[in-house]
Length: 332
Ligand code: FA5
Image (cartoon, rainbow, N blue to C red; front, side, top):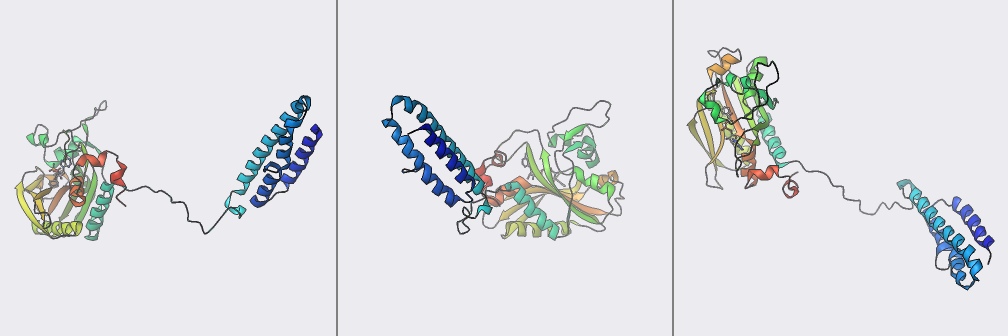
């Protein structure tokens, strides 16, 4: 055996390889040269019978040719593996399952709530998460030093230089009431879903950031009876179960009268507090530039997380913010 035989194999194999156009032929080529009875395999196998001097020159040459051929075959194969190469595409094979993300349960519940209100004629509006103390408090009839400010433990932000306004993370979605009324004329009915923040200790039903959905309907002669009709229709559709309602007097500085709504699903037999509400306070209308003698309206604010917990039987609010995929993958 001579070194030229390896060179000969190199030349002929490379030439042959250039002409190969599909994977089937490539495999045949591989077997021909590198298979158990392949041309190059035979050379490699015969090495052991050669005198040492010949082995020293032939061995490395044959080995390097084998490596080179393996590499080129692999490269060629990857050229064929695109769909257009026909041979490798089997249309009857089941496709690869594409993993897609899941919406967060709170996003699902917010969407469900929004769809119901929109079908009842409410428009959805959005508001800023960073607020001024004016919209979060003053315009809602909660002046500085008013004890009602303690109802909402607040994350205050550092004041920008030369700023008269104080900034905070909104403690509720109610600031959008005056923001919206300042630039719109009644009659209207809106909802404001969004994230809110409170500086409080967390437990199974309290988070420092959570979601609310605010509602506001203003017009001539809007009454508590209208509120009751809207809200009972909403809950009937949201839970899709028969329920009893309880309206308890409560205090929020921006409504008069103020109330809290409890709901008891017939299947649960337990009263659950679901929202604060009331008739818009005349001072709030004044802050927005409306004439309180001409208009009335109702407002409400419900906790999205709390409603999601009830509807989907989620025992701890903190699960929503733990990023555990075992929860999110159950929602679509
Ligand atoms: C308010 O925030 C008022 N803005 C609601 C309102 C709007 C009243 C319009 C009148 C008119 P309250 O602090 O009660 O009210 O919060 C409303 C709802 O948010 C509660 O019923 C509860 O469902 C939810 N909530 C309150 N605090 C937390 C918390 N820490 N974690 C999760 N949900 C909360």
